[in-house]
Image 1 (cartoon, rainbow over the protein chains, first blue to last red):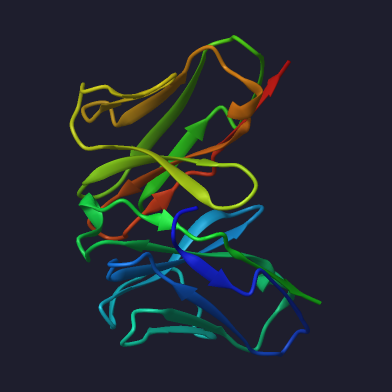
Image 2: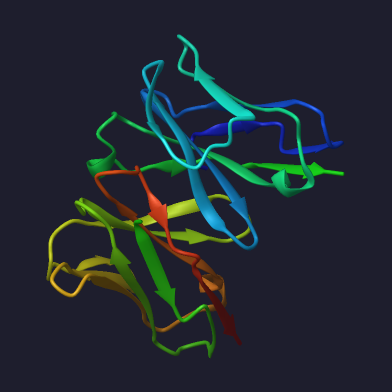
Length: 115
Length: 110
């Protein structure tokens, strides 16, 4: 158990809908990262927040957004969902914003299925 | 564009065998390389490598980095069925927190 929690574990929804995924980092960690893992693409970095501020952005679609709250938990919002958004979404956390020397610890993931 | 390539994509071995997994990378401003093990769900951290030639070791697993040739290897000796997993290599570059390879799926059969 990494100490990172994610809810819900599974989510099934329809195309065009909007969902929110939630992540609580390990105690004391200030950075939260979001990743998407699909069968053909592997793990893709979406976005990083550090202490409430956006720190780095990867291949995140405009339909997706995220935020980190004062208590350091984070939410990833996915809207206008398409079939291709079906994937496993991971949250990871690390102690600081200095990504290159930090170990990232991953949560158990949320499996999103869009029908 | 930053790139991490792992080989082989999949591997089937018998218990007791030794395996070597490969990871090569092309990234701007390399900072560090990480190995993760992914079984059914979340990747779990194995090693972080930042310096060439220094072996990191944990039990039957070991890893080394070659920054000149831009690759790393992960060795597993005396494999057990519990080693069956996808092994992921990831690199920190100046641009992106972590760039992952597609992984090597290792199956260890009794």
